[in-house]
Amino acid sequence: MAGDRLTGSGAFAFSTLAVPPHARSAAWQAALSRAFGHLRVTVKSAGTWSGTLRAEHFESLRIVTEESGPAEVVRSGAADGRDQLMLRHQLDGSALLLQDGRSARLVPGGLAFYDASRPFRLVLGGDQRARVLTLPRALLRLRETQLRRLTATTLDDTEDGPEALLLPLLSGLAEEAVAAPDDRREQLARAAADVIAVLALHRVAEQPAPTAALLSRIEAFIESRLGDPDLTPQYIADQHGISLRYLHLLFQRQGMTVNSRVRARRLAAAGEELARPEAARRAVGAVAARWGFTSSAHFSRVFREAYGMSPVQWRRDALAAWKPYAGASTLPTHGGTPPPDPRLVGPADRRSHPGEVFQGTTR
Image 1 (cartoon, rainbow, N blue to C red):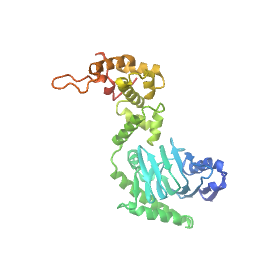
Image 2: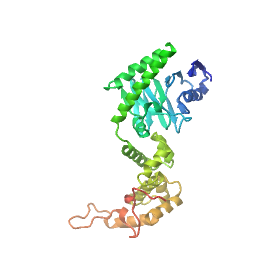
Image 3: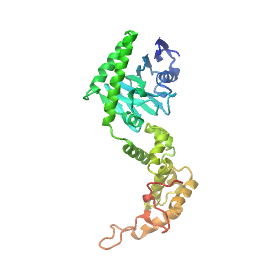
Image 4: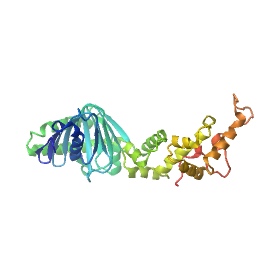
């Protein structure tokens, strides 16, 4: 690789300065993938962008010091079978780490764990420098559920306990690694691994189980993007730093599928719009498209399956229910009957109305 030179057993250094500007993005992706497993990297302003990396390898640890301009680093699946945990120490600049449905914003001095075996996303908004320590997950002796509670949570040396011990050790290890003799290097590496294990156990004990909070964030994310036709399960999983399999499992535990949940919320939103008098002149197809349906025929079919009537009939019944109150400045009170909720009108044998749809249909 251009700009790449070996610095010892399992170690290497790389700089984009030795690479033509047009090839720097691909070269940087290759360098990061060599250090951390397969990654997808996007850099900004490739012509002026630069990055440097130095990887030092120990018996059970690898320390990578990297410096770069703004970029986005994504792992969408397992990394070449690597079963490793990474601890990122932000030295300069800032970074946003997303994994397992959480986000950790790192500023100088901050640390965060992330798991190489699962999807994650790292957003670097500007020039930055960081040190990443990678070690096998087995060394921490944590269960999978515990590891998921550890990732994308921020640490810093202002906290009491193990946090205050890790930064000096990590910095000292990185500084001595190149010049120290082999036996000293391994001693430093083992000490670092021991402290990291203590830190991880301490951190896991502080973190609540995240499933409910994660599902709530995903639900809010879906709600805010119902009109996006590209709102797929894979996109949702990527945006929350979790695997597609785990996303499906979360919804399965709630008695629904991801697709049925998205479809149900889209139908509810479309039904509510169709029932509004101010939207009466809007074509059914336009309403369907507004809420993420790419086919009017498909929208009409799934609407009828869910609510027992066509969108046109739904609108007709809803608008008819409002007619007695057209132009009224106040609603009837003191024994009067308020205008019916337009979402509740329709044949008695209809299965449900959009406002009732929460769990969704499995069709």
